Image 1 (cartoon, rainbow, N blue to C red):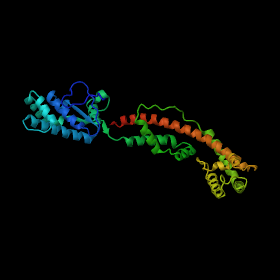
Image 2 (cartoon, rainbow, N blue to C red):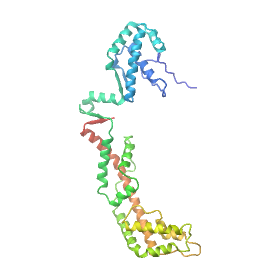
Image 3 (cartoon, helix red, strand yellow):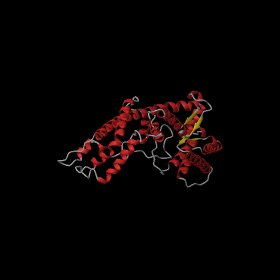
Image 4 (cartoon, helix red, strand yellow):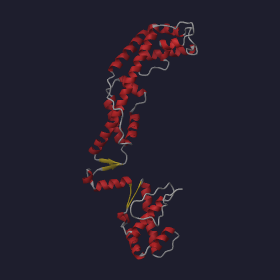
Length: 347
């Protein structure tokens, strides 16, 4: 059985701390206007001593309108007008000094422009502006609602710092695997949503020059062999001792074209999908029983190139992980620094 106390707008104490939980459409705005009215009537608080905060500008304007209308309606009730509002009826009957309450309501209407009804960010901005010295901000700081342009500028600077002079092979690999200005900005936004986020593991940016050199040499060796061995390789792939489900004849010309493109276009950073078809392991695995697997030095070179490629990919993945970790540190530091330089605050 639910023993949670039910909120009663008329009898809930106006002292201490109260938490009211309510879903959408359950009358939160109605309750807030009622509590505001009770503070005016029962506690004799002036309107600028009652703080009301909400999330959006639209909700703030609605609250202001509803509270002002409620004060007018209450003033009418305390002046003798009839009402169908059960809350106003109860408030009038419970009030021992209606004349004093009426005076308080009149004063509240006259001073309503001073009512402290804000969005959460609007209230924070007001406090910072009025207490600039204590909060360590300049008096003429500007509040920006959207800092996306500033974050984009910082990410672009990070990209220039770490990708403009990086190895073309690394940049090509990063782009081919979906790393871009847009993806880094999205990653940063997810991280900045949790300012206390800790990046683990902390990685240093590795030196990938050895892996790059080995890969380039393997690529160059294969590219030099290819023109002279192309026809022989194609003939071996059509060898009758190979399983045709794994090496269908109609696919082999396409694979040869892929190899042509890969080796003549210079070192690339994505091996085409059927690269393994040119390695001794896959050829041996597709050879029929009692047949000898096709053999050629070019197949050995393809295995060598694949191995060097996989080593380089592992190194590049470490490099990307390290850069993503640095991105968080860089953006956090730069965002704070640039906002101070430009004298701006954001939500």
